Amino acid sequence: METIIILVFVFGYLGITLEHTLKIDKLIPALVMMAISWALVSLGIDSFSTWFDSANNGLVENFPDLAYEDKMHLMEETLLHHLGKTAEILVFLLGAMTIVEIIDYFDGFSTIKNFIKTKKKSKILWIFTILAFCLSAIIDNLTATIVLISILQKIVQDKGVRVWYAGLIIIAANAGGAFSPIGDVTTTMLWIGKKVTTGHLFGYLLLPSLICMVLPTLIASYLPAFKGDIENDEVEIGKPKSRFSGVMLYLGLGAIIFVPIFKMVTHLPPYVGMMLSLGIVAVFAEYFSSTKFTITNQEWGAEEEFAKHSPVHFSLSKIELPSILFFLGILMAVAALESLGILFGFASLLKEGVPMLGTEMHNGGVSDLVVILLGIGSAVIDNVPLVAASLGMFTEPMDHELWHFIAYAAGTGGSMLIIGSAAGVVAMGMEKIDFFWYLKKISWLALIGFLAGTAVFFYTRTLF
Image (cartoon, rainbow, N blue to C red; front, side, top):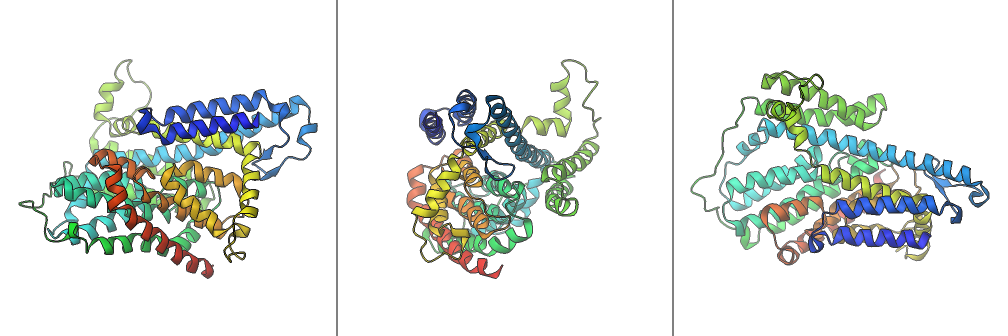
């Protein structure tokens, strides 16, 4: 039965990685894979020899000797545990996405255009990569990429030049997301999973992430694509559509930054702070839009009309729900493999079978090569399941350097292929970037940044 469940996961994984070839949204194989995996776990509960207790982070003793009813009860408790942990991530993401959409409702990101006051290509490159690096640490790398490419389309009209900027934005956004607990889904997973803390994440990864962004940008600034000035008659800097755009931008970003502070002070899960931040931003949004805010007592059929005037309802309607469902499917599918002890066994094989390369003192016995391969693998396949799997594979304590290395590798490694990160996929869609063009022109820059940042991490981890 374990073999069948692994095959279901492998075929589901192939469906996710080949979504563009199959023309099937990746959320579909993720949800099917999750449901079938847990159904098989339930049907074959008596045939399993091991069970991993995620709550206690260890294998259950004498699992085969337990009665059928006890095994089913244990499975239900494990399923509820994983659903709760997954829900924490999803609710957190829903809150962050809604705040970003509220900012966009007031055209808050148009304020960023005021930073662009030059026509020199290399200067514009540095402005956009620095903005991508900083913004992705606050509003996540996916949203930062969408915002900056939208602005880029108004400033650089030559598509042949614009795709070069988009490629460097992907690298910078992924680098910026790696050192922030709210900058990348995978880093958020490690943070909410109590594997890393905000302070240590900054300490370990800020410098490696910065190098990962700066070095490719520096090299690219000397390439022919970024020589000279942009050919626009004038740089387009539009006026914000709302007089509250600046206020909502700084309020929204400040509310998101407040979440880690709230967690450190109260020791509550991050989604609680995110809901508080969303509530505060929503109050100001409703006040500024001069609408009456209500969730109940709406007349039947009036929801659509109300959504047109309520920034909160409008923003909720813009949320990327397919992404939320994809995360639900993939995280719960990986949880099934973890519960059977498969990931725990695989981790043991990795620790024993991969050469240590002289790093026995680091990563709790896990080779640096394993984590580097994980980073390279995240360029080929989605980094969310890779990190979800690592959560079940390794048992190192909170803030161990292994978790920070995984955060860096999975967050920045995806830049090496355009399909390797959410930022790359959305840029590919917005600018119609060719896979092989990116592979030829941008991938080598991303690889240099990834390896340089890795080398810097080997230094920063000795400081803690």
